[in-house]
Length: 484
Image 1 (tube, rainbow, N blue to C red):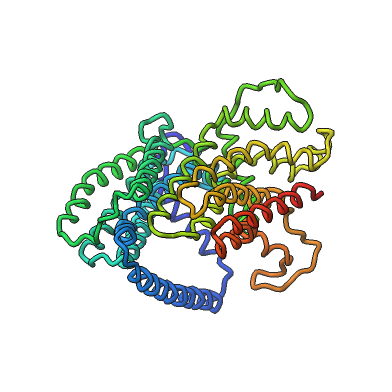
Image 2: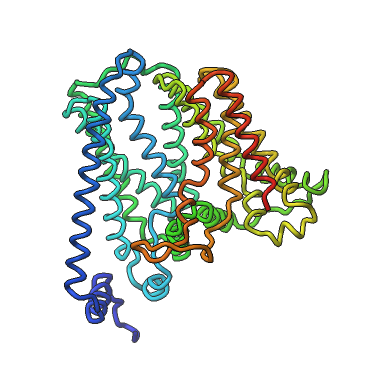
């Protein structure tokens, strides 16, 4: 580009890219029509399944006759919207709301193009999709819970306004990491936790499906704040740095590759590498104290000191147990809390995961594999047993509390130490091509053990069922720790 020549606009660059792509299209029209047919058929099949599920759920909810259950049902849509926003904010904080490929970063963003205008289309599209998804979820939840259509629509509109606010806050925090907007994700998580706590405390016991038209004041009050935050984030797009935009794209590609193989543990490895790279440098500390496998306990304590939120997650997960008990879940609280505890404690098992994936590192430590795994499981075991004891008053029998903790530990260990898919084993034919048989077991890894240890408690929620559940968990842990 010669001096004095104006820089191309984003529209001109997109036109050039579009023209180049159309000039190199090799897909025949028949293939395009076939893909459109498959997409339409998929939408119809899953759409009809969703409608049937909503109708069945609504009929099941109508059978809830107690006052406590009715109040929890009425508060369910609001609670679901808050949890959805909290999860969305957490994902946005991890991936980065906006991302570009390394090619676009090198060939487009390195030029004097207007970065804000280039990213504007992606920002508007993502904001609209987040608003649409939140509105549909809120409306389905309201209809299932028996809300009138008028107030359900008001809730859906409020959710559609809050979702772009969350996305805009993530975009501003991506451009200015030290701004106050970075606190939106933790605030959303705390608000969702407070809502679950309100259900657990019985605050919503007397709540009925709202029928007043004043609910429309909620979206009316949110509209100015939503519009202001969306416009402010749109103006800050030009401040985004190239490295922040490409980092999320690399993480998304790594996650898509891991999830394509149904290897959720590998996906966690990708996320762990990404978060460690973002944390950059830490002060190295020389471990003092016991040696051998017990040194892994000291290493886990050092990691907890650097990231205390890893303990706060299982502690906060205790609250849903009392919300389920308030809703009358009964023995179903056991499998639900085993799964929740297992997922909340995944960051605590980083040591076990590294030792399981890196056999050469395990050999360098000079101890047996079962000794190393046992040492790396001490801290997760203590936290999860405390987690189970925290659910004591929400369970049908006191002995079910340690059973929940041990069951979550067994499911976590199964998820951490499982081997990757063996592509040298027997293969089966799938629409995606040949795949090993062990590939499909990865999708239920961890959940299979959670279901196994929960079955005795479901059939006998007393001391006998709890004892059998703990025995199954102990046997499972022994087998998983001793395996090579």
